[in-house]
Length: 122
Picture 1: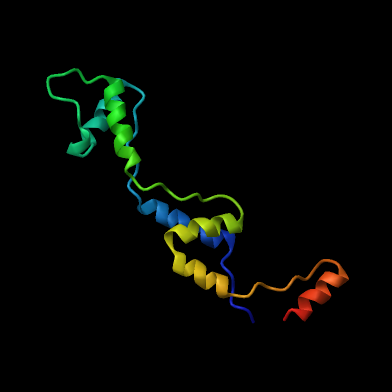
Picture 2 (picture 1 turned 90 degrees about the vertical axis):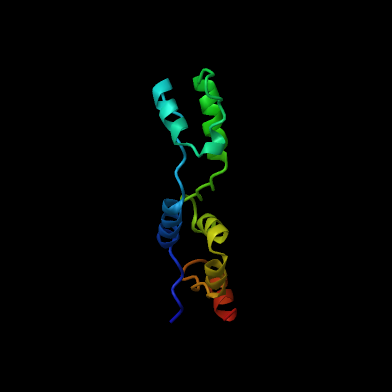
């Protein structure tokens, strides 16, 4: 029998597993207090507002956005099996290469001519 191809659900699970390992983005906050709480958690090099100057929500959000832009983007976990495979290729090209080596199962429906062609290709 043919080696089983990864299903779209299998690929999606691998992508979600990868996304779970990524650092999460800092929330911008709905209020100045929430924004300040996120700003305080930023690594020091992103806390660019000088002490003694007013910490405006706009200035703090700019620092938070700059930090968030440095984080790896999560991969997409929706779409067709092929679209999911493209995302998987970003994080695990070896697995996708192995997947490409597997034969696709033959069609079992279609016109008689299509089915004859599929059988001849084996």
